[in-house]
Amino acid sequence: MPLRLLVLASLALLACSGCGSGGHEAGAVVRVTERDFRISAPRHVRSGDLLLSVRNRGPDAHELIVVREGSRLPLRRDGSTVSEERLEPVIVGTLEPGQPGSSRKLRLHLAPGHYQLFCNMSGHYLGGMHTKLVVG
Ligand SMILES: [Cu+2]
Image (cartoon, rainbow, N blue to C red; front, side):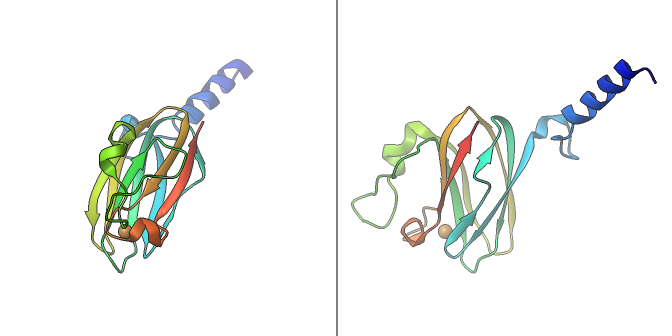
C-alpha cells in the first residue's frame, strides 16, 4: 500500500476509535462510578459528544447531575442539598436515582469549560459525592 493511503487508513481508524459498538453517534465513553459517598470519573475529557456510563456500586441509590460550574455549588436553605433551582441555567444533564448495582447511560455534548458531577440526594453532596471535570 502506498504510504499516503496507509496514512489515510490509519487516520480513519483513529477517527473511529471513540465509536462505541452501538454506532457512530455514541461519542467517547466516559466511565463514572458512584458509591456511598464518592464519585469516580476522569479529571479531563475532550469536548464534543460524550456517553457517560454510570455504575452505582451502592449501597444507596444515587442520582447524577452535571453542571457547567467550576466553583462551589450553592446550597438550599435546608443545608443538605444543592440548589438545582439556582443552578438551572448551567445544568447540562441529569440521571434519576439509580439502584445499587445498576448501570445507566447519559449522552452529553460538552463545550470546553469547567464542570462538576454531583449527587443531590439529601446529604450526599456534603458527604463527598461531587467531582470536577475539565473539558478541553
Ligand atoms: Cu448519592
